[in-house]
Amino acid sequence: MLIYLNALFTGLLVISNVLGVKLFAVGGFVLPAAVIVYVITYLITDVIGEVYGKDAARKTVQAGFVTQLLAMLFIVIAIQLPAAPVFAGQIEFETVLGGSFRVMLASLVSYLASQNLDVSIFHSLKQKHGTRKLWLRNNLSTMTSQLLDTIVFVTIAFGGTVPFGVLIGMIGSQYLFKVLIAFIDTPIAYLLVKLAKKPETKQLTPFPSK
Image (tube, rainbow, N blue to C red):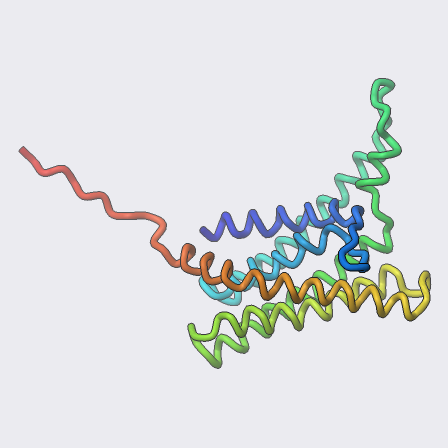
């Protein structure tokens, strides 16, 4: 199960960098589509930490960071490759995949800071409560780390380019949306932990000899 959780984690990270280009509006708030996917990565590291331990969660975060760096490198290479005469979508390709260096830097810095904070808070609570109160450490670690993630990302990516009031509004709206998703995914955390704790192999009963 661990290999599937790791694959899902890194896959969602890469997808979130692509989805970040799309903006959508909910109740007057404008949010990047990546917010739906990215917050799920915190759920996954919580499940990994709950079942496989703190070291496994840390390694997953590190692997995700390396994966994002490689993904960005290959995207830059793909953009710089000369377009074939029959390919008419070079501008659109660059628009969707070629986020600015400042946004990419903001994403990496906020990722490292918030994901490591999430793991630390989660396991501090786990040491206190043991296997009880998964709902508490799942929500508290995610909500705290997401606040840091949102502040760091928005400040680095947009600080100085928009009015301060707009900056605060962006932080507030994104954070509230992430908190809502964190509440919703709590039952999913219990389900994934239950599935991950199941034995992955079962002993086969030998056929009786004749």
